[in-house]
Image: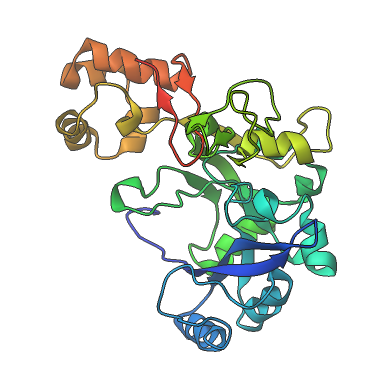
Length: 318
């Protein structure tokens, strides 16, 4: 969105088949972006040779990401690894400890990665090979109300595909100015989860087995996974890395119902305005002191969050 104009970047999310670090089978999602409708139609036609049912969502292609890069490039597109750390269908989550192993000599053709809801800049920058990659915070929404719960602020001159790509590549002064994302503790896969006990496993990272039943039938958390694969003693971001702005969607705030949210949006237009810009006094005039205070506490990072895991979102303590 720019000056009341909408720029639509054409894209497709493709699941690829990978050989994991142990020599077994893994799978990962890839975001493929294209400049024109003609390009993405041609891409879709070629991909129909590699996917059993091209009309269904998230069908696995009989290709690796290494092979997919060339097809995307053939139709003038770029490839970005999606939700890179989640335990299901992501490169670091269930395929590899190194993207360079996957993409080999084509690694430099990947301009960016998508962090996913359960990670942030500071966790991802514990991995040295990502110092050359731009980070994207996208909503990965599967429902309309959750679109733009994460988003990116970009500095571009051309509001089009070319401007978007230049921002990802940090070319000609174009760049990502800020990443707006959930506190990763709210993500569905932030901490490890025991599938036997049906509970999030607490304790120091990395958790690799249940502290109650000793089972290794777990869904590995993003926080725990990064602790295992990181190669830095502490986070150090490259100089071009933009600010990561934490935000908690209004629906996560305890006691804030749909009617109150609708009232806020009627007065202030967008959720982002409420979360980041409107003064406490202005919010208080619309919905009262208690809710205004909660939103300010969220904005200032003062409220305690119970971490998510195993496909269950984290939540803000009442």
